[in-house]
Image 1: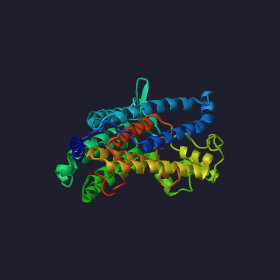
Image 2 (image 1 turned 90 degrees about the vertical axis):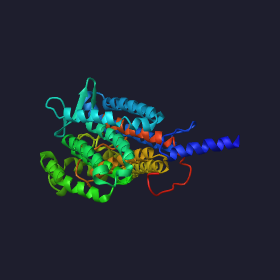
Image 3 (image 1 turned 90 degrees about the horizontal axis):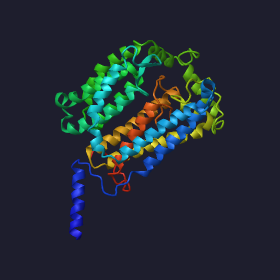
Image 4 (image 1 turned 135 degrees about the vertical axis):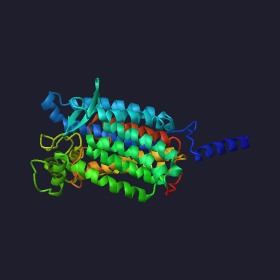
Length: 397
């Protein structure tokens, strides 16, 4: 009887080491990741209401107008998160190809005159009946799934430029270029995520150097070829000028953070949300957190996000399959990079962009996609044992 149990255990371990996705019968999602995600979403919901109530009351006569829409998206996103947490992540990854094809078409359609919805000088939104979404958000999720699938399939060829690197980087560059036409900041973030994931999979740095050298001039042309992007870059390098123009949002953000002090003015007592800071419940919600909850509240948010990213990488290191390891690492990179860029903008360390703070900012596409990623991270966590010491070292098994 004991020998049979040993054989079953060895058989399961060999399947995991070989890269197959096996979910143990009594597998449980990582409760730490679940708790961190729900804490961030809960805090975000409270802050969205606090930051939007005055604007909503003025515009719609209902202080909870934005809150109601946000809650609907929270419910949808959490529902998707739990569905994906129960799914076999290897099967979901294989959906990356058709999903990326759909995203590719959507990225083209949104640029057509009269179809795409405009935001901050760029066409970013696409409506399908009652559903409105941002193709760049769907594309970065689809690209992550497709890239994980391709990197696992071509893992042993990545050190070869033509056979392994080019077939992966060309589709990635094409999608990033389309995203750039829609949203430059999202394109940069997606490029960084893809580059990090490809590097973790074992690509050679010299290949990245060649691609970067070719891409930088094109990125510069795209950046300076747009009037509002050029204005933001020039305003960033001359931070003390144009405080009523390109630097207005960042300047008001810094005022909010400074006014918050150590403990903040108290929940609901922000002055900057009263028509001084445009859309304080979206990209600049961290400013309101700093003003109302103070330095302590802002640090708590940073700790929660950092803990989630580190926990995600721990799942990646503990994963028994290359697919699980790369998927968990890619999701963790996404959360970390988006949070880093958003907070960098809010604190005037980076040029102004349009990236949401993961799980916290108001916004349908970003919130739902972030929760979908969290669901897949929970799915991977079902296949690992995080009670053992973190082995460190390489991500891939």
